[in-house]
Length: 216
Image (tube, rainbow, N blue to C red; front, side):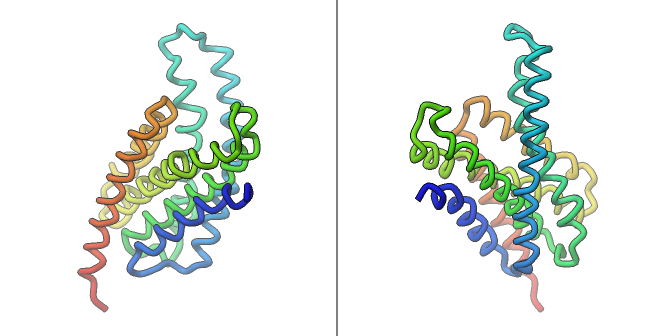
């Protein structure tokens, strides 16, 4: 039961986002993207640990730069690694041929990362003075949707950069994703998840309308 509670939320969300696409992506690319999301958890863990240690040594608790401890380990590291998957793998796929694809691949990569990260928290719940059930529930309804949402946002802006040749969108996506992740980690859990879900609802609806106008 603990294992299922750890993996199911991310897999369910991947399936939901996948089915939003009128022209579904090849399953093998979805699986590879999900696996790449899992893989980046390992360099993310190292970079987060290194950044956290470095900042702890250089920034005291009264420093005006204290927010960097919440910004860099986690938001900056993890969102940029998700973005690397989209830019260096997904964007090069022949199947990446219309804007909705960015949202699907972005959410898939992010949820692969979220799933493997889930093991660290659910299986070490005692470190947080909690039961694994409580941690699993909180992450299923807050943290995993947050990761999925930032992946969608990364993919949305990357699609607009790629298909509509608007250079600024290449940079807006990571900045927005990092900001959402930062505010979430800063303590605005429910608010950021609700805002993120509303935003991606309109993103999916906007691009689905574009898909519905396409005839073959």
